[in-house]
Length: 220
View 1 (spheres, rainbow, N blue to C red):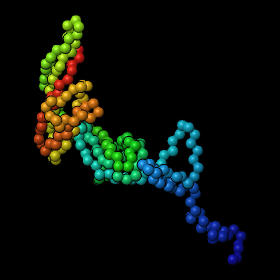
View 2 (view 1 turned 180 degrees about the horizontal axis):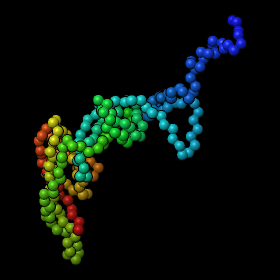
View 3 (view 1 turned 90 degrees about the horizontal axis):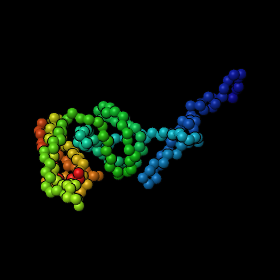
View 4 (view 1 turned 90 degrees about the vertical axis):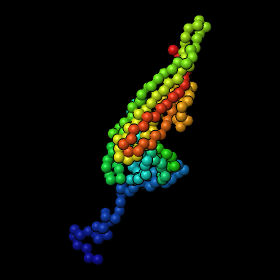
């Protein structure tokens, strides 16, 4: 091959477009039990405190949306299950099926086959009004000096739920109860983490009144 001053061999000219540096190579992920392990093709110096972020790809989840009334607030909750690889915790941008952005939310650390949920703010699809109907003190308790120190009481609360949407809506109600309380009017109220929980399904445009009656020891 003839060489001329200033000429560059063809093999040298083509090499830059074919060779990737270590920093340009993507990390390789492998499954280890319930976790993901990322192998980086280059050395990383992590002086403390510091963080190296490795972002997973776009993931799609079929979700079930419910409305939850808890602690006086009615909000939207998305429930789903991780069927694929486990997911790291952090902040995510949540998109709907039409690519509508719901906002940025804190995402939990989720293992494979684990059910999880996201609270995505308030809603105007329904209204819930909590009404305390009555409190009956059925039996007094006395101390050694015959002073009243408490009662065996019964309390009734109604939840007035109005479905303002054009489709059937599922509303989940949580109500904290005192320790040792017992629901006496409806066995469909279930205990969960110190509260009772009930799911109510309401057709579009309808209003339901859901009663809760329970007995408890009222301490003065």
